[in-house]
Structures are given as C-alpha cells and as structure tokens.
Image (tube, rainbow, N blue to C red):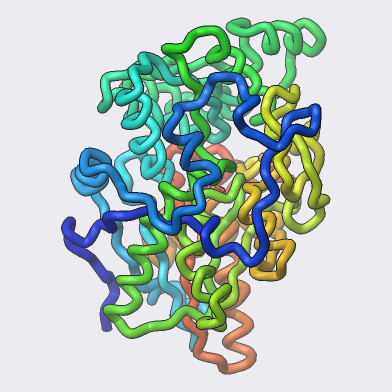
Length: 432
Ligand SMILES: *Cc1c(COP(=O)(O)O)cnc(C)c1O
C-alpha cells in the first residue's frame, strides 16, 4: 500500500495550464460600469504580465525558471497521501486521497500564485505590493513572496479575523509585511466606513477596496489578488498537474474530486487539469465544490455581471454572486466568505461540469476534528469544507458498496486558525 505518493523536484511542471483554451463556451469578458468589454479601461493597478495572463487563450504558459526554482526550494511537488485512517474510521470501501498543500511553508496553496505575482512585479520595476486578506493565508503568502523578491508588502486584513488571529499578524511581520485591520484609517474608503460604522467587522470586499485605493496613484505600487482572477488559478494549476502524475503512478482514476471554494483558486488549480479531460469527453469524474451554507455563492447566487469588491472599483465580472454588498454573518468562522466566484469556475458550474455542495459550519469543524484524529493533520477551516464533503461521499459508498476513488485538495492546515475550533469544542459555535 502506497500511503504517500511523492515526486522529485525535477517533476515540478514546467507549464501552467490555462482552461480558457478548452472552455465549452467562450468566457464572457469583464466589463467596466459603462458596459465596455475591455480590461484596457482598468486603472493601472495590476502587474502587467498578470493582466496579460488574465484573458490569454494559450493552453499552456511557461513557468519562468526563477519561479519554478522557488517552487522547488519551497517544497514542491507536494505529496499526495492516502487517508487510510479516515477510511478505516468511516468503514468505507472508498479510497480517499488528499493533496498536501498544507505542507507549503506558509501553510496553504496561496504561495503558488504569490511567488509568480511577486516575480513579475519585480521584473516590471514595482517597489511595493498591496493586497487584502481574509483569514490571513494570502497576506502571509504574499508577505513571504514579496520578501523573497525584495519588494514591500502592505496587507489589509478583514478586521474580524485580524482580531481573532493575532499570530497571523506576527507571521506576516516576520516576513516583513505591513498589516492593517480593515476597514482602516489608511484609505478614504476605510475612513468613510469607520465614520459611519465604527465597529464594522470588515469584509473581503471592503479590504479589496482599500488595497486597490492604496495602489491607485503610484505606478511603483501594484495591487495583487490571491484568488478570484483567472491568472491566480492559472498559477495554481501546478497542483492539479502534480495530482495527475501522482495518480498515474499508482494507476488510479478519480471518480470524485473535491475542493472548497472561496474565490475558486484552489478548486480551479487542483481540478481544471482534470475538468479539461471531462470537457474533451475522456472522463467520467465528478467535480464537487464545497462551500459554506453562510456564503453559498455557487449554490444560491445568481449568474450575472457584478463587481469584485464592495465599493465598485473593480470591473464587472460575469459570475455566480450573492451581490457585491453581501456580508457573511459575523458568527461565521469558517472562512470562504467572498460574495462571488471566479468567472471560469462560474461558467463551468453554469454549463454543468461542477456540482456545488453547501455545508454548515458545526459539521465542518466536526469533520476537521475527525480528520485530525485519524490522519494527524489539522485542516484549515476552509479545507474542512472539502473534507466534510469527502466524508459524506465516503459514507455514501459505505451504503452502496461502491469502491470510489475520492481525491480531496487539502488546501491548507489550521495551525494558525484555532479560534473556530475552540468555539466548536466548547460548544459556542453557532450554525451561521
Ligand atoms: C484562501 C484559502 C481558501 C479559499 O480560497 P480559494 O481561492 O477558493 O482557494 C481555501 N483554503 C485555504 C487553506 C485558503 O488559504
């Protein structure tokens, strides 16, 4: 029995995979609020190469040598592990594999895109990067990547998580990131919200608005995003391409693949290389997107044009959205609180390639506890959503006797996110 399928440094893929080349229908272009369908009307806040990658239809994009080398030095390829302990506990005939993105030094998949974005920024003469962060993983990854590329990083962290997770600030500061609780006094958007609602818990949408504003009037400052945009998913496809090689080594074909969805980047990164096969008619794999009942964009959102942020700085993207002014209930502790969804993931959901599943947060943390007890690894709250859906699928297999192969993208560990687990254990966690 192979419990851990590892690849060598040499096997880090040389190319990112771009699903724009294979989508079943053309991706609706982003628009500005006057209805013009070009990204060229955007303010000059993005790293140029990332903007180019956003709409490219090249099927593969070469990973720069420097980026690939950093992937290798920082631990890629990550292992694919068999969750035998969990299988035994569930007494299921299903086989469960999980892809260990938690083994990244910053604890999640986010570093895969942070390194690429910081690399292109440096090459273009940028000096400082701004961004928002919800749970803190993206701010952490960007702080490390910026530091490695000798750039400054300014991070706007959603206030409720900032207060819940003091050690997130510490790790970002260790990597030389400057962190602000959002809404902050650093921007006009932040000051306006604080004046109206001094105890505003913040939202990812507001933090995005602050980070964008901070990058607006200085060409040496660029804004970066850790999810939602196509180029972020592009960078994350190292994950899915590795999973493919790893499954081939043990001669497995996945029946079900599962990832959680916030903005869609770990889902797309891990699953798009497999969804490609499905689009081409060469696969029967089912693709499940795990999302919180408190923020069910793919399940209950509308497929329409909406802003990416709260205030309406960003272009309009055609996506599943709960409305750009949506704020998840503040009792919600599980992350994944973004109101919208990546445009490619949204399109594939619309076309029937992706099935969303909503899960409630008490059962999410319960699943995380079961995983920790049987496999030893503590999943991030976000990751617990995917784990919960995998457990549900494995339990179904117990009833039907099917020996399905289930693959979960294990997006990150929860070692800096104990607040939610603590509430779960002491019984105060509400089902948002
Ligand atoms: C950021 C994050 C997510 C959600 O973001 P996606 O872009 O949807 O992947 C999920 N899991 C972890 C561990 C994260 O850090």
